[in-house]
Length: 445
Ligand code: 5AD
Ligand code: SF4
Image (cartoon, rainbow, N blue to C red):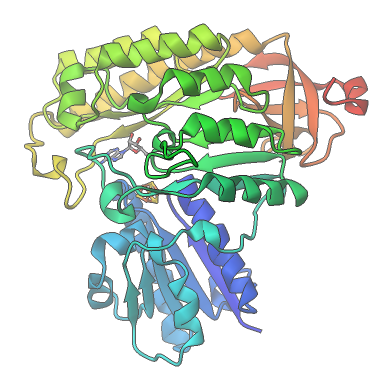
């Protein structure tokens, strides 16, 4: 029996793709190895979103090279966004790599492994959905649903349109059927994945010839028996229309959390980024969301130090962060990416130390606001999907609320159960509480 080892970098889409890679390998008779040293097939599912992602992966690739030197029959494969961004160059730079494939060519890995090909092969077309392959779920109660691939946006900083291609949506009926299958297999929480989930369906037509809508998909999935929670990532503020927001208010299983990437609070920088919304429009979306779902948790992504970002532009970002009061934010220093528009811009306007200081100022504000926001949960009883033991204290449990807050709590529930927890305290990142044991007999009550 052959063994595989997969290392995954990057976003949830890559985690999804890796589950499909593993599922596909298992149908070919492979089993997972405990370490790279014990594997016949060593795979990397790579990311290229920032320079750091590249360098982390390259450090791991060195370890694979050593295994290959000791056991030349080991097959080394590199998939994902970094592979797509360098294509055939991977074989010139790293001659010990046997197979490379982009995110649209995961299925070709099987073809390669079952052929007699002894030469290195690269597969970089945009043609398949990894979501069509069998999955090996890392957590039996949580599943990914890939609703679309690719991205038609042209954000100036972003490498993804070139690594994942044009946007293609999967048919609504196919997605509902997949969610039904997942529910039958015990999945309780489904996360819809796409590079820009809420533009879903523009390339599809319903029976009367109208485009499909993301809100329609949300409603159809809300009706799937057994799926208790629906999440999605990531939406684009430009497509956050009233029908999607209404679906939040009306669909019982749709969680009270939206990750809505801001990127910058300065309209001038947003324009240079080609985000197609400005500060007012973003704030207006937030107001509309809160009008319909007052208690919603909002998280975001922010880039500091985009080429040309002045102190005033940055202060505008701080103003928006303060005004919105995010429940959490991922913050990044701008990193020029090959082939993107922003990589051509003059990036010497702001010194690196200034970018680092801006990042620190931003993080301090994000944490303060998140901490303040989290206090609204103290004293409440929240529904929690249990993930397993707490990472810091194995005598306690860890789970997630519908607001996507991590909760550490004392209790008796098992992984995969939905239970109710009374919240005693809250930091910017996590909640702490105690399971309501009487509620376990009737978790929905
Ligand atoms: N530099 C820094 N951050 C970036 N992101 C995307 N591209 C870059 C880049 N070139 C951030 C954005 C995006 C998140 C996934 O990564 O904030 O939303
Ligand atoms: Fe990384 Fe973006 Fe590719 Fe995800 S889509 S793996 S974040 S480059």
